Image (spheres, helix red, strand yellow):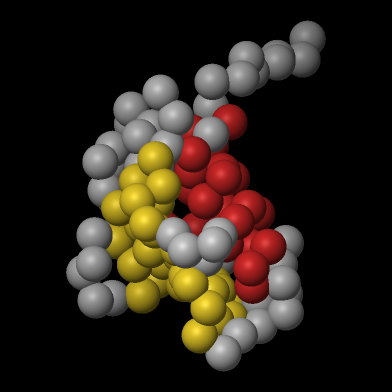
Length: 114
């Protein structure tokens, strides 16, 4: 099962340079260690600021902080609002939503080295 985008207009909602989109987490375990690392690693690859709000809770977390993302205990069915502001904001939000929708690439086989 893949992630489900909850609401989005033309790829994102624009306010000045800020971009925001919502996506539902459908990964069976939610954001445990590997998905949290994948999310924050991707977020850090963009120069813009990235915030994450969980279930419209009113608290925006630093999307580049592994401690904040793992600490939020994000589970299956939770809705994430992903907001970015600055250079590359639109691309960042699209990429992060796509990662959530792909279940953090967890269904790909994990290669083990000998």
